[in-house]
Length: 221
Image 1 (spheres, helix red, strand yellow):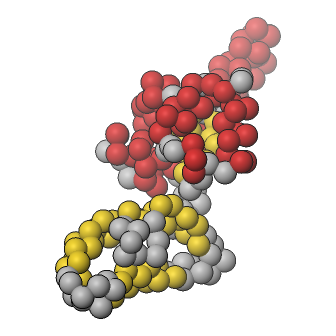
Image 2: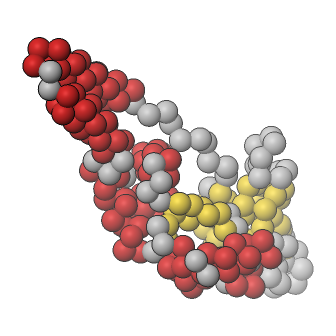
């Protein structure tokens, strides 16, 4: 949820923005509002519904301007489409069966060993960087040093759900790694380069001791 605020508050008037939080979850709120008028500024986490309030205590009209962004918990990545995997595995099994038949007919042990290995390598490539979108994501992260799923989705013009699934596959295959800093999850390849990028994009004063420790450990790798 993103809200842009531009209101003329009448004397002794108030403005309220309710923030809904789903049960058993945590939402991260970033409020850029006048601290003299409003009760919430900066980024903070909430576990229950709250109301951001701005009050004009004076007898003159006051301009209220700023923005409020709320990041809700993301759903888990969608399941992988099973048809491509099944078809690739079917091809692999067919190649292995053909190799076995060739061995029985011609006693070619080298062919029996080589063809199943070739099929296994083909399956692994299809699950890793063989997919063109995953290849784009990998190259983008490699150039940037560290990126969030939202940044990747904007850069590639893809949906956030699609990017999250491809990142899940890349991380599962050991191509990329991830670290959570505050409300954001960053994906990276080189830990030291990622730490430098993350530290340059956030206010160090807002980092928790745990986040600082994680980034210092990454920078030393």
